[in-house]
Length: 249
Ligand SMILES: [Zn+2]
Ligand SMILES: [Zn+2]
Image (cartoon, rainbow, N blue to C red; front, side):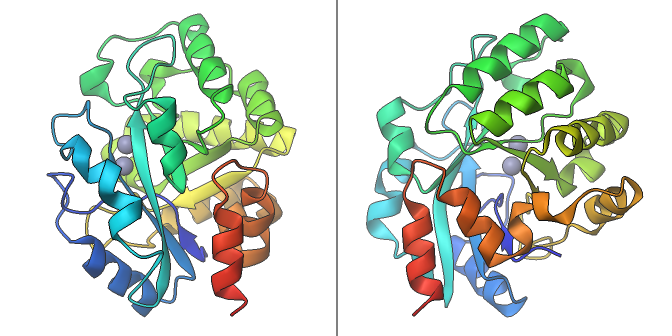
């Protein structure tokens, strides 16, 4: 199971239900070693005011309620060029950045060629850490060639447990995405995408799938502190040092 939940929402995302403090407290109580709070970027209708993001890393301590909380965002992909709803400078301020497609902002179905172009552009963005719930069939891309690129560019591919509830049409695509990661040795992270304390850390459905696929567990970066630190050292936000510092105190 996971030691760090790297995709969670607090109630500043309007369809989530708990404060960051409540989420952190729950994370500590269920034994997580770390978590990331990743509320929706400003382009989503349920997003917080932009000032929430600019104040996030300044106002809140790295360790909250006894658990390191990476201050991040789930940035929205706005078009086929892979434009995000934060500036590069804003992205650089976070500990952890997810890039995701959300239907309200990209309602049209993409061709595989368009989706490949979009994800190739995201792969080149130095501040993106994780490719969020990318298995949705309307935005299918060439999993084999793109996961190879993601591995080269140190982008972690997310396998999102919330997709099993909210995006079940992507189940088969998620299996194919995971198999492509297995083939290319691409790192993945299994996350809850919890919108309340009651879902935090709950990822069993994804692990059941990974067992069926005989997926190598050493590619799942959030199953041990060592794997997570090893991956984060290759990312640009400098959070490996902060996390390592807390864990080795
Ligand atoms: Zn999302
Ligand atoms: Zn989310």
